[in-house]
Length: 320
Image (cartoon, rainbow, N blue to C red; front, side, top):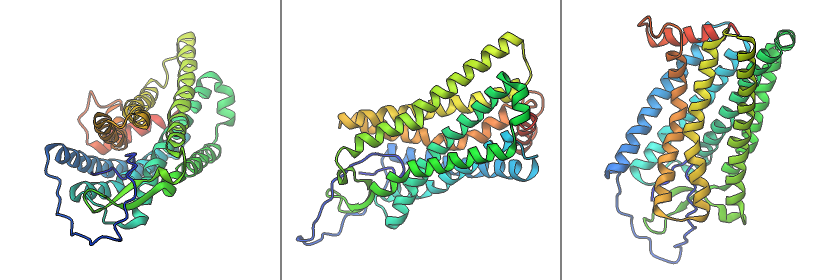
């Protein structure tokens, strides 16, 4: 059985064969169509994610003026790049159907995945609240909205993401698979009673439901204000922000649904659905740079390079 190092919730029990004569495991390879397809998708995520997010970091970090919004999107790109950098470990794991990188990387790769999930949605909450304040209370926002304060908010978002992701370090372990007799990287929730349910529910509430509720409230205020005051300014940055949030929602919702289902239903179809939802969630980390590029003003009228489109989009964002 191959398990995703970052998100898959396999709870394979520990198998001790110390009293038996070890039998060399047969060499396994990723040969079936489903496995090969997932590997190719992960390779695509890695290449696009690393290239795209590196471009965003270079443009937002070195070529653009430091503003509230560019700093938020810069942090989001750093989070996505961190996740994409761990994807090769998952690829090798799937190809060889065994874990060869040791206990530390087993824990760290999973930890980085959940830090990315939490930090991404927390940063989107910060962007949404900031935009809501600027639309609902423009005078107060202009006087009190400073780069220093948003950097503090971003820092706190990262700290919270790291703290909440600690269970990935605690419960992730390298064990011997009883069936294939190879080392695999799994989550061992049996180490603490009821920990599986508690962690999945906490992840759903803190990392998805509450942020989406806050973002929805912010959007409601923004839409009401825009309609009431007939405001059309900042429509492009608003579209970029909307695209980022909708993409996160679509990519992560199936994962949370199947994670909840797996607690009660140990069915093969649930396991397969969880594997596909993990890929969809991983896809979120390579899409953001393309959203920046294709939501810019010049996309329909000019055929500039990919970097020019990203820079154009950030030029719109930093003027908020």
